[in-house]
Length: 539
Image 1 (spheres, one colour):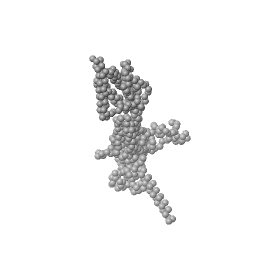
Image 2: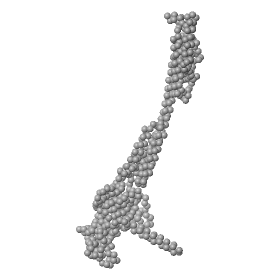
Image 3: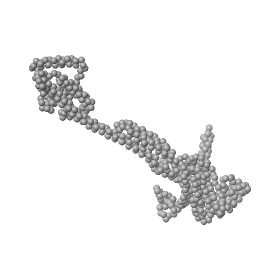
């Protein structure tokens, strides 16, 4: 039991060492590991770069993975002799501690000590050293392919297949119609400053031979490749933005405050070459999944104007529904949108859609208030117009009833003047009999009682008074004190709530019934026989 903790500790330590060894093996050295010194006086190295395959572009992490085919060429009259010497030396059993050639001239075939085999050793050949500055790492799973070839006129060519992950700045001002320039920064390791190496860009390409069978990269298209050199001897190594100068007592400052003081210069960060892979985003995907839904959502918000402004609840319901759908769409698009300090155009479009929906909602509320205010003022105007029309019609009916009352009074006067003769008595008796028969007949009919409010009651005496006011004649039996006129003619204010459209309609119906009853009375009086004296007077 006492050995169990010790055994467990040993197992844990072994696992830790294995993991540490695996992590260390995952990071590979730079492909262009230089060897030996350059030719005396320096040399020009021509750099050609071709994109073999762009594996991935991760704009959310500002990284990309690519497989590059790079070729370095230069002239070195010592190259052929160096290859022969290193190949011959590697044939011996004690060369390189018995391991043979340390750097074969190619990986196409394995190194073999057999002198009859087709193999060369480049241990003594000059190879320029280049570092990939912005590389995240070279995967241990990559296939290592390279080759060194000697050509005519002392020319040397060194090609490499490079697979790595790099970080690069990106701009999203035109997202999703943007172009990105993926940067691979390479610097020359100047171990021999007395023999400088001059870097010259040469050929470039976007793809090696590959049968065209479909898309090569999700979301992006490679459109070009360019290269340019830079020299940090004429530029500041530390960028001025947000940086600070070295301390005054720094013996070898990297960023001296005194321009005359010698600055630190390492083997790197002096001069190199930038490779830019130009890629264009496939915008159709974002047009279908982002721009079209936002556009349709915004167009649907215009349907609010087809709803009656009085239906505020319906209008606001449409606005809130579209607002929620736009919010859900934003959550879905947030996964594919890059996290940038710049507000990308797609986000700007979403903000504009939000503003349009908010504006339509506020406009609907203001329109509802304006419609309600207009309806209230229109109702006041119509009530005033109805009161004026009712007053005019009331005066017209009252005048007509006054004329009828005056005619009845005149008939009564004529009958009174003829009551003294025997013929008049007979006529009166006959008329009384006719009236009794008419009254008996009306008892069998449905009696329509006309009840008007006290303010709207009209009597024949009132009509007679109106007639007196119009003609100046005073019919017999008239009682001016019993006259009732329109409630609006008194000059007293009448509340709008007290006189509505239903009350006015009801009063007009009752007034029409009273006028019909008065017309029937006038008709009976006009058809009754006149006394003899009246006939004589008429003759």
